[in-house]
Amino acid sequence: RLAVCGTVNDLAVGGARPLYLTCGFIIEEGLAIEVLERVATSMHTAAREAGISIVAGDTKVVERGSADKLFVNTTGIGVIQHGIAVAADNAQPGDRVIVSGSLGDHGIAILAARGKLDFETELVSDCRPLGDLVGAMLEACSEIRAMRDITRGGLGTVLTEIARASGRAIEIDETALPLRPEVRSAAELLGLDVLYLASEGTLAAIVPGEAAERILEAMQRHPHGRDAAIVGEVSAAGRIGVSMRTAFGGRRSVDPLIGEQLPRIC
Image 1: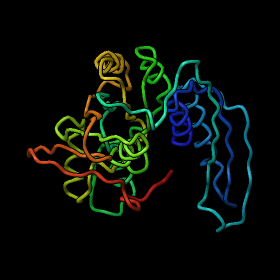
Image 2: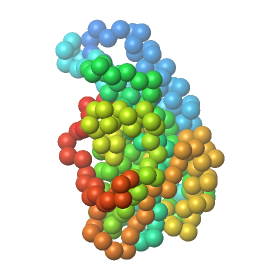
Image 3: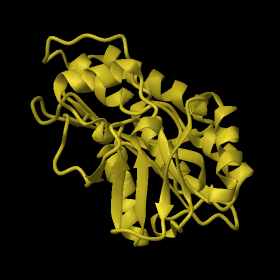
Image 4: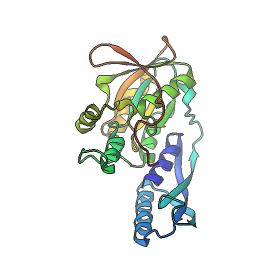
């Protein structure tokens, strides 16, 4: 599911309608056939949910100890409609920043599932395909400036990359960030910054200010965008990069994540 959704979402946030997927399996000698069947079934279910077809594939078996049981590599193909121009360097003063849902669910769920810490939660990963949600957004406004899925590096890194590519200043509001109580509590307990936690089914979008409410309403009508929120704005002045108004009324600079805050599985 993670392999399918990750590739579908990469296409979607580029403004494309996902259509086809290829997949390659690198299988370690001795992998139980039941595991392979479970993975293939998961991919099939996720592809149907995303409305795409898996059209080609390949398998390679390597010697025992040469791989971590199973590697899945995917490639996606989509179509960008005429007039859609989504790119990281498109942000303009007055644009608004929208996130499609709660932040950090995937990162905290994976940390808990690894069992390395005495930490338990019923939180599950937000891994889901975003093609339909992006379609609804583009139907509401075809002039969306930029979109990124909030995976590696979290929201802080994603917005910093957009700000630098556009040569703009972006300011976000800490109190507007959608966070589940479990994520907030776990981050505080473990000393993690929620701005750098990964999400696998959440995106950030830079949209024209005059269309922000219209796009937000379209997102909130979609099952994958019910928790969408406007969390910031692109400024005409200020230092290039990202800053955040804190809940205590102060201001902090948001830099890109250096290294990995948590172990990754994708």
